[in-house]
Length: 119
Length: 374
Image (cartoon, rainbow over all chains, first blue to last red; front, side, top):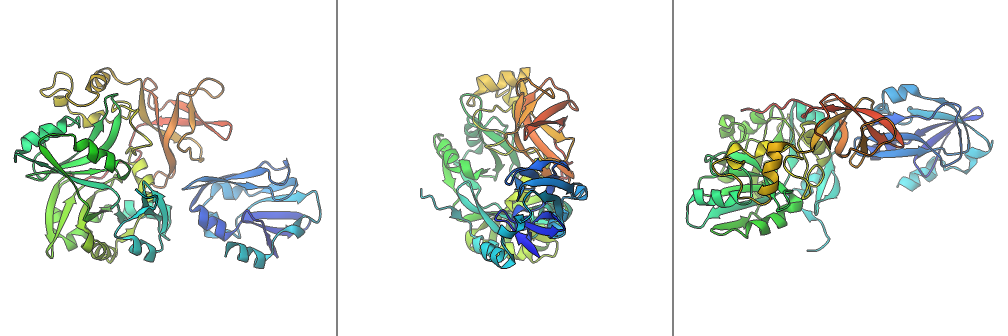
């Protein structure tokens, strides 16, 4: 089941890791994505650290780490084909993070709460 | 003036087409439609795009004594262009300059037989009109009862000729008054995309029907300001307030080409416009820094304000990006900046982006080859 942040990221628990992407709503707001800069694998991050740069035809924006932890994998294929975020945002994962707090997922919104947020 | 943005006669049409509206130069304008900026841009380069540019200022300048030559010379006192030599039915690009040698605005001016039609930037229109009203011997009439459309793209002539057959005979920078079912259209073969196309001034009351008739043609899609910006950027066209302003001279803006020999030093009508004492020597000697094209070697766009350096570490900035973004037809980021003239095309400079310096190649403008019908 997906969880969501207020920054329009989707989070999916897989084993003891969390897979992170941006929501279709966010990708629509950004417009055509033309450049993605991913973090380095193995980087230790705090919640809120800017870890990804997304440039659309309109503007630059960031993705923050949703939780503290270690980046365990990044989707390099996405950096080569940034437009795939617009094609299917829920398939276009950016990175996997192993949270330092095992219960980290609990505090994020479920689908109903996120849908209410974006109205 | 109130703070409420003005709306063009096509406001409801934009909303019905699903446009995202944004404030721009005191107007509420469509930045994009559901197609999206990238697809709108590519559609315009491949087929035809329809732009609402009704926010732009249209102004008539009419000689009070009936003599166009006198009015032309009067306009030449504000615009360093060859207005006198402009034949009826033709249009040129020009600049309003200030006493410091900077650019007050850029404009198109057309000779329409017994008067001139000027098209100026929305943000500058009020100031331009006041500037023109200082002139003696001409009547300055802002056109308030018309909207303006741009129809741009390789199939624009074919499409527009279905509605207005006479446009097929027009050449690049022709300007004509044409009739369509009793409606007077002011048509010029020009634009701001690097593509062939037309700008069409239409009475407000008829604008929506005419725009709809164009949108009903299968080749035509509505295009917003987002793609208008990336199209003009790829075409190497400067945007007022970004790539030039009152503190930037024609030579620095790489717009010296709009000032012909006849208005330059030793020309038959040399000078006689604001800032000539600065502008003309600089055109002869060359400006120290000039608007250039930039192509980042990597994929990250460099946008307005990004500092440019001539070395990978340390040193002082040699310029700042004045316009930049992603060029959909180029397939990568493109930008413009005023940089030292002595740096050759192809030289590598460095853009500072998020604390890192990325290599950027100085590139001749335009980034795409225009396809005008001369």
